Image 1 (cartoon, one colour):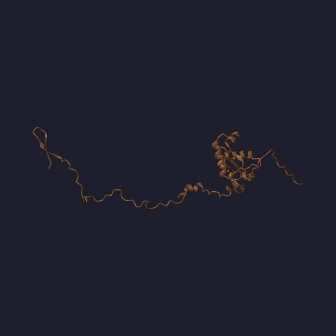
Image 2: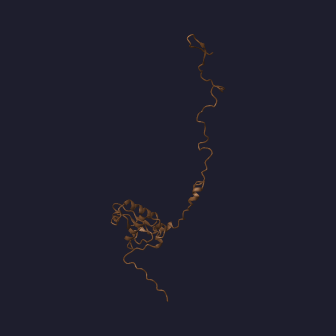
Image 3: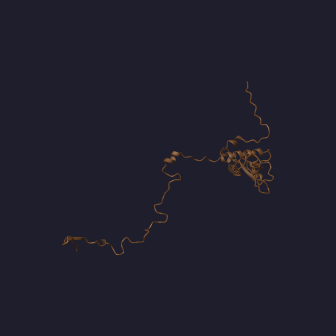
Length: 208
């Protein structure tokens, strides 16, 4: 008896699909929590026909519970750098907010956008998966290696400015010639006692 296939679990209401390839990609897995949360704010706006016309303005996101403009900007920059979204229109004070597109979906309406159909390439998030993984060196090898990680630093035996010369431009020979002996200052000659005076006081005579 053939096994009965389990029915698909249906989704009720409007929704926007997010492929498992995107969820499992390096671009998405490496995102911060704030960046992943911003993606769901874009998914909520998608109607199936307005990709490229999605906004992330502070006025809109405040109604969704976001409070920090700095965190919103960091999340947008991160998603753009990872190829998960692209900016399709530059906004301003009199023309409204910036518009964005989710890069795993097509853009069917280019009216009002700053990009043309030929300029949009779906799947920008896949570019990070094609990058070669960085080479990792074990910590033990780095710790025990006597050569710096950047390679051997070959220091020249001669300084860059040339051979160093003496700082004092003086000859090692005194100006008056070679001094074979040095004359010390005169010392006081010792005194010699030659006898006693009548009063018992020693007579002192200088030695010559």
